Length: 193
Image (tube, rainbow, N blue to C red):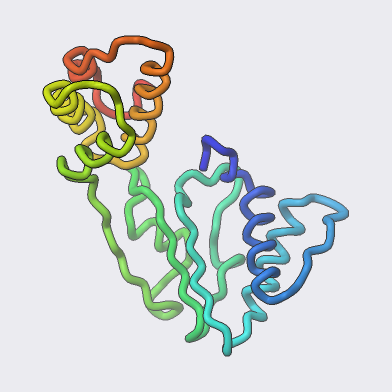
């Protein structure tokens, strides 16, 4: 996450190394030098020596947010064992579609079985449910207008919805009036952030 700075290599590899080591009953040593390199090397070591008798489902969410590093074949096993599954999520961008992410990570047909699972945005009912969950104050007509405005601005993108809803909740806490019509007339996408 860019917001929580878990996209930095020292934080990402440190957390992953700690989780993998803990799952194998190991404790991590304190790095003497560069923490990012130390933890990265430890991740490689732990994945390469992962016991075939122990199942592992490694989930790496938001690879597109990585800053200053990338995940490739020097980190992930070249041929994951039968007990290991690796799930990576990354947003497709103008310069990086699913095939390019596959190439960057080093997953080719001869190395690993790869399955693309494109995820679309949330639909209107899910946006409505989100607004009900976060309890933004307003009558049914306001909620319907706000839902329509948020759907227009985000096209159902979960991250973008989270950002907008967070801003709206903060504004509401400060006692500001939320104008769904004005919001609907804003420019869609991440430009507000």
